[in-house]
Length: 311
Image 1 (spheres, helix red, strand yellow):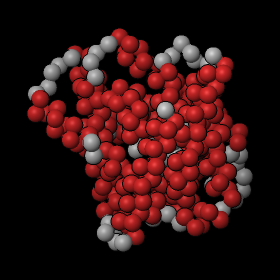
Image 2 (cartoon, helix red, strand yellow):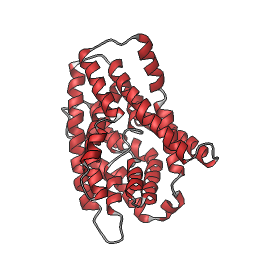
Image 3 (cartoon, helix red, strand yellow):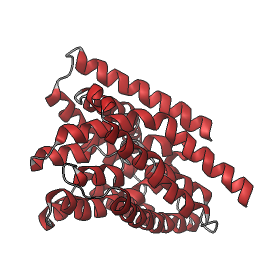
Image 4 (cartoon, one colour):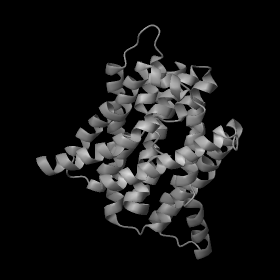
């Protein structure tokens, strides 16, 4: 399994490099990257989510697994938020809010869906949708308050109307009612869904290319925040999953993968919107994206190894 994740991570890194080259060679500019990101977030990912629910037959096992994914994701975020308060202390001269947001919230949509799909197909994507629901709730409440210093109910209500959240609702209705869509529609959805991994990773590469990677490599603080995001905080989720043997192993591995993904690109976007230090946020995003090629398979390998040893 770790080998599959490592191979997938390498593929995703190569796709990232395509995005980096496209930006460096001026094939795509900053606006083009934003437009590609919008296509992924507002068209491809929602279609992928609905297609995943349509593609998997109804079973009580999957329903139970979905519910446990919600619970594990919520507990994982609570643990991570508490850990961020402890390990990323407020200090003058530090961008503590940016560090905490980057360490708490992962790029679980862009990175998680391709990895979960590679491991478990449409069933894995179902579990990602449950995790994403919890991610949206925490990031648009706690996360925005963390960066802005105040609550933003309008922003939270807006995310409830986002294409991905609407797609999750539609998918759940189709799943529980078992409505059969025309074959021509499901095949079209399948073609669109197949665009998710390449487009998401190329878009991510374009974002990485816009960051000051050399500056990030010289900043020791970025390494510490990256270690929190990729190793320290995922270990908390690993421990949680390890001692929840009554939950399906597939669910636990997907939750661990999403919890161990690199920092969310959302932090950079929100910093730009709020007038915060977006370059620092993009440096953390870039370094965690690169390092995750090694840390993601390592986390899963450690989890499966401990499962064999302890249980």
